[in-house]
Image (cartoon, rainbow, N blue to C red; front, side, top):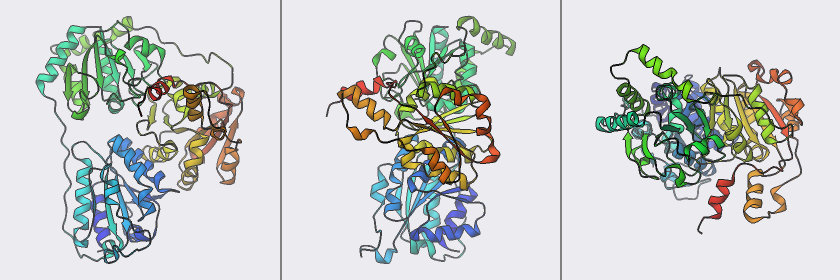
Length: 555
């Protein structure tokens, strides 16, 4: 058996299902092995960076590590950006790159590159296989490293001769068993006492780490009667049409969340699953925490107290911690009594009414609000990086069964287009709506063709304002001027889709985004569709906090 096949068989045994990448000479042996491994499906992207975003999205949603493959040289360096994204997202993606034969190291071979140091600062492990007998063990080591402790990406360079060498029947290797992180009981008791003492005068701020446990967070909120805000990445961790929902705090925040979290209606702020970075805190604005006691729950101990002094830090698996808090708060109560307490939140919360459009003006905000009205109740929004994301964060109202995804921490333009493919593979039955822009489309837009080739029925909504909108408005707000080439002559995205043989539609007015005209967009039997929404984009997006941060930066 070839060494690479033995390594891939280990991954198959751990439930790995997809290999994302772009084939090339130095990794052809790997792709050839897939003929013997029908359990592994190859997803061939149009660019290595795109394949990394696909892998990250799939892993984030399923929890199953995925494999992303690149060739030696430029194929490897094209994976650096998605590896950095996976690092920020704490995702166990396994990056494998090829290399020239070890016998030719240092002789000037085509695409020769020593990739390990390049990946070292953005992975938990980065090494080169130099003995074919070791290849299966190194891949097992990489897998175990990726999933253990705080998850994260790993990188292995596998020279072509290491892949191709026959190593006979390899030993059977085992995978690590990930154990839940139990919190210290004294920390849980202290926090529960603080919650009980606060009564109704508490509030929740949910980050991305809380999104896997929506039902648990809903139960806690209804039990305490506390209002709930989310960070931009945490958007969707709590249904935004719920009476206790405040919306988003941070970048492109909702006024209701800002007024409440900076107000005097609560004494205790409980933060769940957020690192409290720039976008989550309106550039670390102290008004979020002034005069408040803080409970901070996270599975990564390094995040506790990193940005704000915390009165009650709790390190542990988030769902486990919150359930232990619930158990302590309801100790000795019957289920009927708990339900009676939970129902009381309705008296404490203001009635929630559906937003009206408020304006018939045709612009990005109106288009996104209208899209929210026509989206299926179980849709996943996968939002890219750009001006449109601020409107999406602020104006999409995520309902109970909907999901919201955005890679705002690392913020790679085009990551939403590619990530939407990984998301659709992760949950084939859930409609996926990718909201992106013309600038992102010019970077990674040809992955819509990949979606067509793999029959992935994604709705790609491209906001076309013929400019790098966030850059343009950022410069105008900060410097009162910008270069002319931040804008360009409008290119028809619909015509691009037509040339690729992909379904398409255009909307140039609100009348063209009515439900009766859009039902066929979500027909999952017809493959992907590209929706081009043409706007002028002259309105200033809700990004003032970001600009203030840049204006105050010290260079």
